Image 1 (cartoon, rainbow, N blue to C red):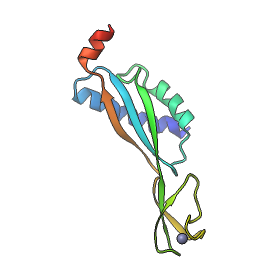
Image 2: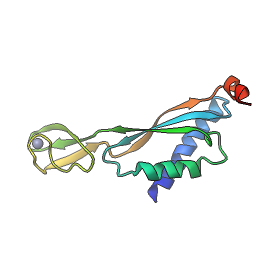
Image 3: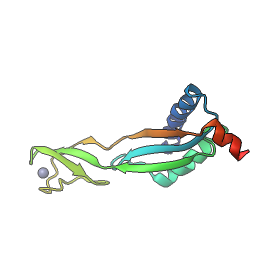
Length: 122
Ligand SMILES: [Zn+2]
């Protein structure tokens, strides 16, 4: 399951961000996933729960935002927006497409919980 290894690298980023800001707890982790990334959000949420265990993001909320895919159509000679699994040009229906974006996943941002919030929860 490659969602697990994706999440391992997310954890590195999240842990590093928390460490750098001296935060002991992470409130929200926002991920941006390209429509063509072939990542299963359900598997990703499962991986998140497993991988974040024991770290500052253990109780964090996971928010997943989807970004559209993009490609270059050789027939239209321009960039087009591609939906999930899109292999046809939405404008001309052609197949001479080169995918140029929306195939990756990245950490969009991370909300760190402040110490005050942590204390008020205790
Ligand atoms: Zn086209």
